[in-house]
Image (cartoon, rainbow, N blue to C red):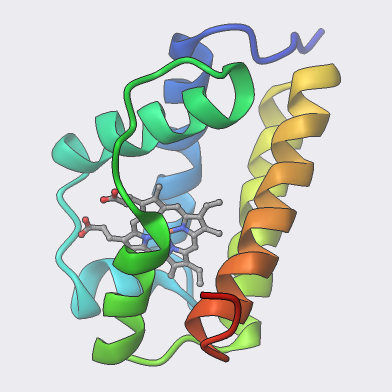
Length: 127
Ligand code: HEM
């Protein structure tokens, strides 16, 4: 039986599985391998802190994800299909590994942050 996301360790497991897919994905993989050269060893603690903050209100994430993705967008433009794929992969990975209230919240937050990110990054809206 699958359990819920209850700890930073669970977040790490989720993110490792997600990035393993994202990096090899036909639609968005090139952002991680060609547009930027993702160093997962450096990146996972940063994004883990981000998700710990989103899901549990803890974690020491101090970055600005909108700014980071605006920068990537200038290097190689994002479109809606990229964000849709990101959300599908993320939610699919959550469902494969976890089940419960926090898992549901993770999927909802992934969708809502991706939506805001698209508006800000692609269309330049809302600050
Ligand atoms: C089209 C969809 C997306 C693509 C292709 C993408 C790709 C990337 C890449 C290439 C980086 C930079 C890694 C590096 O440091 O070299 C990054 C950073 C990051 N991404 Fe995304 N991303 C997407 C959507 C999202 C969404 C929807 C979220 C949140 C729900 C998110 C959260 C983050 C965070 C927290 C960072 C780290 C920012 C920092 O360094 O402070 N990404 N992403």
